[in-house]
Every structure is written in structure tokens, then in C-alpha cells.
Length: 393
Ligand SMILES: Cc1cc2nc3c(=O)[nH]c(=O)nc-3n(C[C@H](O)[C@H](O)[C@H](O)COP(=O)(O)OP(=O)(O)OC[C@H]3O[C@@H](n4cnc5c(N)ncnc54)[C@H](O)[C@@H]3O)c2cc1C
Image (tube, rainbow, N blue to C red; front, side, top):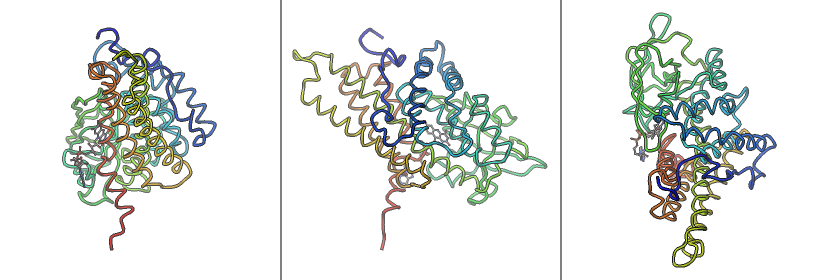
């Protein structure tokens, strides 16, 4: 990469001060969120450094896990009480800016831990270990034939003496590669919601095979093949809800935070674009002096502010005990789609430099894309929102 193109490097070099909503939208936050924001800013360079680790992507994934564990951020995914959704948003807004890889690993640790927090002693003990970074979790819901239609899941759970046997395939499972355990959603009776269960599977169990996959932007992900995989009786997450209920409650909490990660990525792209157009001279003046360039910046800021407000409204409601399901879907849909537009404009404003491999905005362009797909695609969010407001005669 030649000098002047810009690289995906440490936040301090390329990113400047991390923009966080705690600064300019303080009315949504409590004192603890400001303390958390200061902590996240302090540990951000350590987390960003995982992108500079020599070796392959797996080495950088492992470095991100270590940085998240030693920085104490994993502690926020396994709270004593309910999740602090605005706290998770603060962390993901910062991680989205710093490292999409670390953001994904952090979020999936949370997705794995959330169902365990509703379980018995074994499950809660594993969640506590995840909070200390002693184990890394995956959340295994999607299957080759059960994507948006999660009820089509066919991974079978069969009683076997004092334990259980699992058979099936889980696809596009993040954290596979660094995870030690997966929370696998399986069914005793296909097609029956009440027969679904969340099951803790140690990934070194006989009959569990991880097949790595490669996504647009680096983050650990793979397929999990379960073939006669035997787990103990205590592996079932015993809770008031069936497995699918646990999975959907988990997604409902973390969906808001996907929006926060999207905001972080978009803010970073906007900062990169402003820095570029302020110094790049064409036609005898900085690009920033061109009105069409200013119009791009204005549209980016409007998109970004709308996204932040949608995310914080949903997070605020959730932290104040309201279900806010429609607001959560609006936040996830609005913020991820807006972030994609903001990042696309940033690429445009950087011209050729914006599409060179290794440029920050080129990296963000690839990193943002899956956020419109995972944890409920944009179409599924539109379906949920439309269904909530439609009044068919
Ligand atoms: C990077 C990445 C990480 C992921 N991590 C995880 C993970 O950790 N754990 C996990 O369990 N899963 C994970 N997933 C899976 C993700 O949740 C699914 O990809 C997603 O739910 C969509 O399922 P699908 O890919 O099978 O697409 P499909 O469901 O086949 O959908 C394909 C297209 O059809 C549209 N569509 C589907 N149904 C409808 C409908 N009723 N109306 C209108 N449009 C519809 C979808 O919106 C989409 O555009 C991950 C995916 C990605 C890309």
C-alpha cells in the first residue's frame, strides 16, 4: 500500500478521536455510560492493534479475543441482572469505529451468553466464565434450510440415557474458529416450537466438527456439523421458555446493538471522508469547497443522526422495561441501511483511494454489508414493522 492511500490500521493513526453518542446526545445516557465511554476510549488502541497482528486472519481473531477479555469489555455481556442495552450500544459504537472484527466477536459472545443467563446453575456459570473471557461462545441458530424461517430448524435432539444426542448442521455461525462452546438450538419434535431447546455444546465434543468459512470482511465464522454428538443432561439450558423463545429474546436485545455497531462504522467513514475532502485539492481548491461535496456530507450527517436517534430510542425503551419490539426493528433496519449509504458516499468522496484494498472506507464497505443480513434481514425487519402497524379489514 503506497503512502497517502490510507490503511486499516490503529485508531490513533487513522481514526483520530472516536465519535460517541454519549458526547453529543447525553440526554439518553446515565452517569455509568459516560464512565463506560471513557473506558472504551482508553482501551480502543489495544483493540485496534489486533488488526496489525502479523500472521493470518485466525491470528488476528485470537488477538481480538485477548484484547476484549483483558480490557474487561466481555464483562458487559454477562451481567448479574438484565443487560444494559445502552451500555452495549456505547461499546459497539466504539468497536464499530475501531474494529469490525472485534465488534463481531464481542456481540456473538453476548448472543451466546444471553440464553445462558436465563438458565440453571451450569448455564449461568458458563455465562460468568464468558464474561471473564475464559470461554468464547457461539450462537448457533441458522441452518442450511432454516435461515429467516427459523422454525424450519431440523437439528434433532434425542434423549440418550442420562444425556442427549445432537444431529444436524448449523450454517454461518460467527465465532466458530475462536469459540470453545456453542449454544445450539435444536428440536425434540420438528415443527413444534415448544419442543425446541437451547443446548450447550463444547466444540471439542466428539461428533462436533467446525468447517471454517470466509466472509466479506474478516471475522471468525463457519459451519458446525453435528453427527451423533453426545452431551450430558446438564447441557440443556433449563429455563421458563422453550429454545426458540430464548433465541428470539436474545435477538430482540442484541438487534438494537447491531444498529449501534453500524453507527460506529458510519461515523468512522464520515470522519475519513471529511479528513480527505478537507485536504484533497482538485480544480485549484479543496474538495470540501465544492457544493456537491458539501451536499454529500450533509446527507451523510442526516442519515447518521437519524440512525443514532433510532438506536438510542429503542435502547432507552428497553432499559426502561418496555418491550419496544417495533422500535427495535425500526432501529436495526434504519441504522444498518443508513450506515451502508453513509459508507458508500464516503467511498465515493475518496475517489479511487476509496476502493483500494486496505483503505479504511474500503474495509468498512465490506464490513457493513452483513449487518443488513444477520439477526433478521432488512426484509424481515420490514415485515415485522409492517405487520405491527397494518390494520387489515
Ligand atoms: C456474516 C454473518 C454472520 C452470521 N452469524 C450468525 C450466527 O452467529 N448465528 C446464526 O445462527 N446465524 C448467523 N448468521 C445467519 C443469518 O442470521 C442468516 O443469514 C439470516 O437470518 C438470513 O438467512 P439466510 O442467509 O438463509 O437467507 P434467506 O432466509 O434464505 O433469505 C434470502 C433473502 O430472502 C429474503 N426473505 C426471506 N424470507 C422473506 C420473506 N418472508 N419476505 C421477504 N423476503 C424474505 C431475505 O430477507 C433475504 O434477502 C450470520 C450471517 C452472516 C451473513
